[in-house]
Image (cartoon, rainbow, N blue to C red; front, side, top):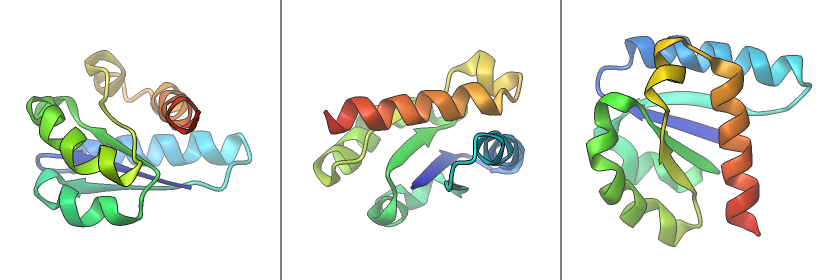
Length: 104
C-alpha cells in the first residue's frame, strides 16, 4: 500500500511521514509513505492508494479530488491538530479507514 502526502514545502510533512511509517511498522503493516510538493499531485497520484493534503494546502482539496477520484484514490486534508501534534498513528489510521471506506 502507498500513502502519499502533498504539502507546500515538505519539511514538517516529512516529519509526519516518519511518524506514520513508525506507526505502520509497529502495527506490522507493509506501507510505503512519502511526501511530495502539491504541484506534483497529478503525476504522483498515478501509483498511490491514498492521497493526503497537508493543512497548509487544504484549499486545493477540490482540485485534488478532481484528479484522484477518477483514479480510484481517496483524498482528504489532514486534520490541522493531528498535523500540528505530529500524531502519525492517528493520521495513519485515518488514511487506512479512508482506503477501506472508498473500496466499499
